Length: 363
Image (tube, rainbow, N blue to C red; front, side, top):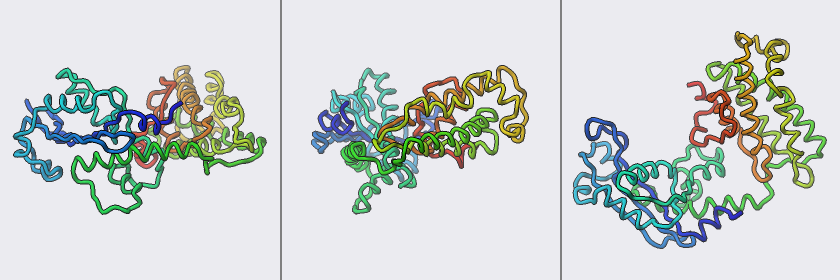
């Protein structure tokens, strides 16, 4: 399987960034978000080869705060091409490439919306650098904005600040070369976060985790996000999932998958077992202590569905040979399972909302 770094290095790549008005009262009194500027850089072997820049005419006068933030004025846009012409020019510049951006879904929302209106198509092969930055940087930055990530990776050795749209595109182009390279290098190394122990020690740790996760995940599924202790229960589950995933034997191998499946199935294998747990109140009546509930078939099915969705969705991350996932990432899966009542069995890590976990969970 080709790495992301090799894919970008060997392909034609265009890095794009846009400036928009933000939500403003647009035509016909509706809230709208208009494109004001497009900046892009074509990379060859991940080195800048050609640039593209255009302003885009706006159907209404700019608000003072937009001008203050962007430095773009109505006079600058008065001679700018229409959104249709600007997108046609950019589509020609980006034809047959891999489209790359930082938080690319934001830019592609405009490209696809206006493209559909005017019959302009843009590359379907796209790479968003934001999730890669989150995976690699973890908690080393306070925010995952492009300036913060760019400054972190530059190590503070830069006198430049990101002010213009083209400067943002240039910074994203830097990241397009560095982040995939760093990702590839880290995958080729022995991870420092692996804990090498005898296999019997791994089995012991999985057994301890099974009890903690079983109790707290059941509480999450039973009482939901409105319970004041929900963030604590989620954290206990997520922390244990991340912890047991670290252990490998002397051959850098994990135990067979059935052992990790036991974390979930050992305590709650089927709906009938869920019903028995709920009727008994858990360990020493522990569930009754946190709230009242009536045991019904519907409740048991919902609780088991949430439990099972977490199991199915977490297993690929627990079994990963080259990655150890952060507790926040496991927590996002648990929260999604509770929100959807377990109707989705293939929940993915929600990178867009990791910043709201724990402290802002119930807000």
